[in-house]
Amino acid sequence: MRIVLMGPPGAGKGTQAALLENKYNLIHLSTGEILRKEIKEDSSLGHQAKTFMDKGQLVPDTLLLEMMERRLKNPDCDGGYLLDGFPRTIPQAEGLAVSLDKLDLSLDYAISLFADELELVYRLVLRGKNSGRSDDTPDVIRDRQHIYWEHTAPVLDFYRSKGLLKEIDGIGSIDEVFTRIVDVVEK
Ligand code: ADP
Image (cartoon, rainbow, N blue to C red; front, side, top):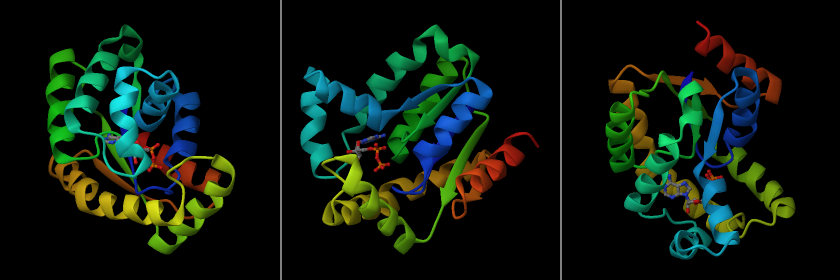
């Protein structure tokens, strides 16, 4: 199974991604996690990404596209992958489509988790108390939400027009939301 998982910050992507990864034996590629690891390792990519991430801004498309094409080439992705947090812009979605075509790994579904904005901010402020993430503060959370609506929401239309989009209500218990996703991908 080859999936892109989308949704505004706080929609529960990470939690659902972990469940999907387990159930379907997928390689879970979270660009946020990969970038945070690069920063921790003090790599050149990490350096370039950090200034954007701390402010809640998007890291430039070319960096993301190179990083992800390199990662998707790894044969471990042949058995199925789950992309989490990528693509986040139209140029990323277009670039990804070209890479996947080249690698003969085109997508089965783009799953979009949606939830009410107030609920999302509430969840993230709570998470920020424990996550220690530099971008989980109220101001930066709000900026990340705006960036989502401005740059990432158009990617939903991109996948809708290709017939790949599945929209799923992200409000409910973790299990309830997971069941909704499973129902859709197994249909
Ligand atoms: P969340 O979805 O909770 O905001 P992520 O862990 O997915 O968090 O991403 C954290 C940060 O990493 C983003 O705010 C952004 O700066 C950077 N980032 C992650 N994925 C991308 C991407 N596809 N394009 C640009 N920047 C990205």
